[in-house]
Length: 75
Image (cartoon, rainbow, N blue to C red; front, side, top):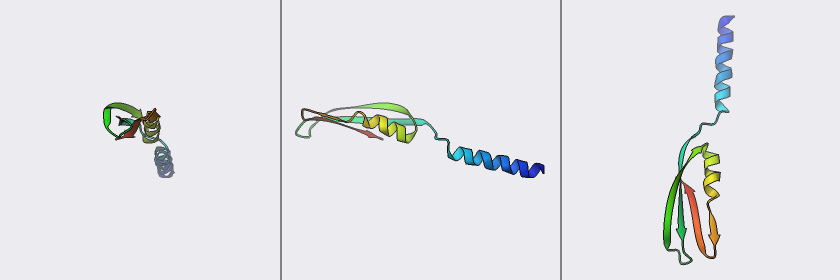
C-alpha cells in the first residue's frame, strides 16, 4: 500500500510541475527609428518574469509618435 501512495504522490507533483511557470531573466531591446528608417538609438532592459509576461511587458514599449517609431523585441 505504501508503494501506491508513493507513486500517487510522485504523479501529483509531476502534474503540478507542468502548471508551474518558471521565471527567468529576459532581455528587451528597444530601437528608435526616425521617419526615414534611420536608427536614432537603442536601449536594453532586463525583465524577470515568465516568457509570455516578459514579452507583453516588452511590447508595451512599442510606440509611434510623429513618425518617430520605437520597436521593442524580446531577445
